[in-house]
Amino acid sequence: MESKTAIDVLAALAQSTRLDTFRLLVKHEPAGVPAGELARLVGVPQNTLSAHLSILSRAGLVTGERQSRSIIYRANLSALQEVMLFLVKDCCGGSPEVCAPLIESLSSCSPKGKRNVR
Image 1 (cartoon, helix red, strand yellow):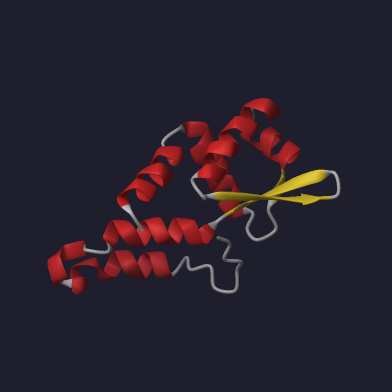
Image 2: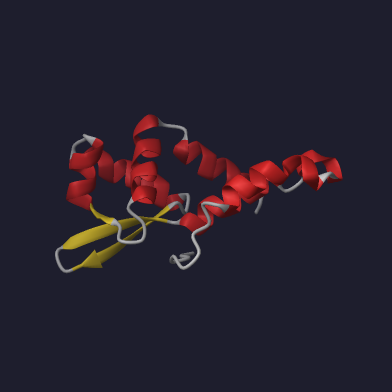
């Protein structure tokens, strides 16, 4: 991952509505959430949420899939994993045992068996 990509991902999450939206989508993996329901759960108007989803989508953090008359949004867990690994890649100056607790805690949330989109 390039620094520019990591900055784009982190910038997309650096706003409370977008962070809340992404966290909510993570909770609903792998089923996703229809756009209208997502707006209701986050507590914002649909047009406002649409703008936030566009930013999250451009950063690669969410995907939308049309199902009949609805768009189902899902968190892109592989994109989150990629940015987390980028942040800790050079962790601890070659002493991986120092970062082992962090890596282990991230591994316990591994999306094994879940969709990897991107």
